[in-house]
Length: 305
Ligand code: CP
Image 1 (cartoon, rainbow, N blue to C red):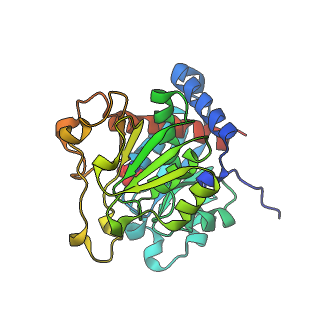
Image 2 (image 1 turned 120 degrees about the vertical axis):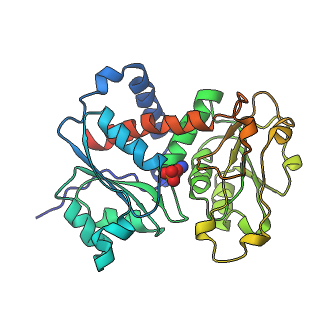
């Protein structure tokens, strides 16, 4: 029996400017005409298979599926309550869930988990975060949020800050930003949490200027975007006490222009002071809400070819 090839969302590598624009136009239309999409996935079943904790990604995917008329079956803590505990391989779990669902949204602690799942799956696999590797659907909603505020990606000045080593959202984001012309990325992090060289090399290959920094004052006042992240303590083996925490508060934001937007994939711990939440440039909750709309567009794309 030949297995049909599903359309997966595994890595930001699979996107071009054109496919991003297609996705964003579909998202715009979903926002403008929700009734048109309300039954689009009627009769479909989406499985959310999460081996790592999540609030936003799992619930926004489930909300997206429901808003398209699909049903959802979910394992929110698969590492502890699925048959992985009994020793079932990821491949076997995917083969089994293939018989229960039309698409699988999966978060797992292994960097190559989404590729492994896709290699045996007859239904689309959507990578909802793979270890310290990539989190492509987060970066897609981040890009959509940036597009809403800035209109265009060419020529942007973007600071990525916090945990650039293990932060999978920044890894996916730098790859998407590198698709555009004359983008400058400033990398602000403690020396133990620097961006892996492979991403620095990727930017160089794409003519994206990368400037590592160590202080907020190293950043230009006319930045377009600050994309701040928490330290991924759960992925640190040791040395947490040595790591300087970069905290963005009102004083830090006062050095930037009225057009410098502050994004964060969330959850935030203490790296953004709540005192700045009412700053109109602080758009992290708006960003999180965009997750539903982008994920509606992604589910529509992979399930209605
Ligand atoms: N941004 C993000 O991935 O959040 P969750 O871990 O809550 O899904």
